[in-house]
Length: 95
Image (cartoon, one colour):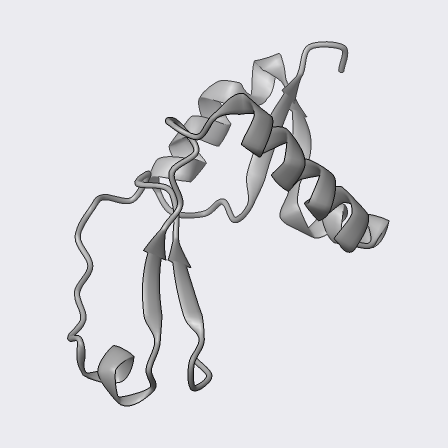
């Protein structure tokens, strides 16, 4: 964390516990912000996705996740629960 930075917390797939102290946040003047995509208005979501699309190089998307076939979902679910998946999985029904 850089001084004056912000930590964005999103997703609860691994649980909702946060095992830390406030000390690093206070000493570095850091904010902890939650990311709420459920209640965020659609209009604001579209603006955020447009900003991300413009700011990120196309090569970054390959690092964010991958596509799997529907038949791969049961094994992928096991891998997610075991903590072996990083990023997002897109279930492509055409694979």
